[in-house]
Length: 231
Image (cartoon, rainbow, N blue to C red; front, side, top):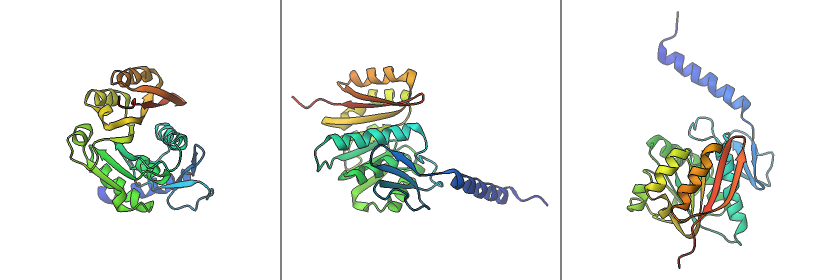
């Protein structure tokens, strides 16, 4: 007797989850970070663990774009004298992994926005699983326009993170993405294929930003750009 479709889907999802768990291992990032499956003990207790559950399908940390973004974020914290406690805006927050990492690295407050309500909820759950204090972050539905017009607690921040896709990043620059960066602040841009990098850099430079660093994994690129201090 065949299973009804909903029951078959539940079993299929459970089988996928178990297969996913069996193959998902801790991932070392940079000098200090560790992406850790939520059900495992950390094999590197000296590192900052970012716990991720496979049910959170909006960003598990296994993709090069996320890893590059985390690596550059860590470098930005490391280049500033301690204590470096910036506010952070995470555009297209997905699972919230970048916001959580920034907070664990020392950020004071993080705002994560995504156009998908499920992603915002996913981010809240992930932050809770990582022991992030609720008053340290806000996740909501929106994008650059909503942040700029004051729908959220921050309109600018010294550190902005945007791991999306290159064509979307270019459109967001046209919509005012660079306005979210406080003078003297930085933005980390990821989700960019090698052949798209020049176009994203040009879009940022057209808004007055300067390229600081460019990092690669396979065909993926992440960019670190900065906004000059106000005159």
